[in-house]
Length: 187
Length: 187
DNA sequence: GTCTATACAGTGATAGAC
DNA sequence: GTCTATCACTGTATAGAC
Image 1: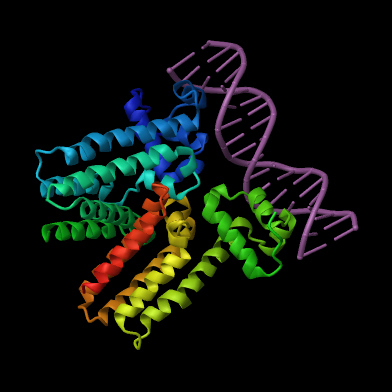
Image 2: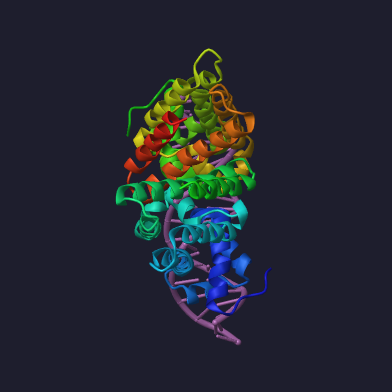
């Protein structure tokens, strides 16, 4: 029922929404068709590989967004560490709708869909972890401590999203982000 | 192909394994039949409510285990706070197979299965949070700080599991638990 | 209780008209 | 490009024999 999106980027956004809402297996072609306003024929014309190709392209779009908006800034040597990490947290708060939205990569990771998209999922989190570690090294912090803190922060972000969904309380996620911010301020 | 389990508890354990491995939607009756060695007829005889009833009973079994092994000890006023929380972390490390196993409640929470089992999921995490908060209050810690730290620890546990699955590196989860233990020692 | 056979809706995917 | 019709298949669930 939403207006049909002729441009590919908007179409991918709609697909991402369906995958986030229903998961990979739950996102049937019928639901996708209804959500995009496109018939199955049109969908298979746009994505000859079917659902798999849709998911791959959606994950790639998300990855691209984080790469340019989150990872790259973290790696920029000119940006001081603390503002860089704070910008990352702000970006996450915005992207995940203050806890009202799930991380599709994380959700896929917990399902049996993981194996199918294993490289996309692990690559996303590995590059996030590396970029965040690089920023923390500029605090300065020893390599091992930076890597450990980076892992902790990623865990807390993902866990905050899990908890927010579980308790049906998005504010959970924002509180966790705030605690990370406070922790950062104490470093 | 595993030997068929005549006793209900063992059957539920097998069902839990299938749900953990494939998710709710991915756990088809065919797979469940193969994993338990029971025909569909037998399964519907044991669970007239079908898959829904299976999942409800599995979630209840998991909830029971945590209630007696984790939540109740945390609430016991006689147990000092730090040993109580350490015992909880050890229990989690064992239960989740050092990161090789997923939290079924958390996995369901991130999928569209959440709505169907919302009360079971939110109840589980709420009681976990309350019990952990109760333990932290005995540190002693002010109520609000205890609640915040409790929320943080739960986030880190769940996030550690997500990260471990995402990176295909179970050690991720153990490292996060170790960091929580270190944090606890500094309190 | 356990099985086999079956009903029937829904799945992903394809073909072909327009 | 978009649609409709249709494919073969799998999904859950049920019925009934043993």
